[in-house]
Length: 82
Image (cartoon, rainbow, N blue to C red; front, side, top):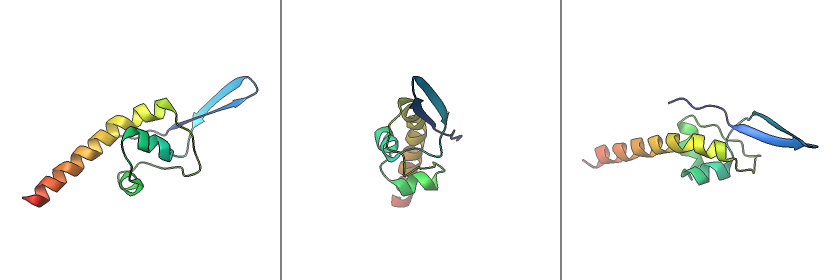
């Protein structure tokens, strides 16, 4: 599972600058379906607590990763219950 760095957009005058960010914002994690920050960090997803923005490209990048994490979590719970 490869996790790329998120992008950060900012605008100076009329020029929009895009660069790689430090981590995903909490709101992007929540929007993609992962509410727990500890689970995200355990699975290698970096979090930037200072960012407040939601960028759609970052959310779309996170969705398949979160889906895979949640599937693994369900499989582990099934094994424990048996």
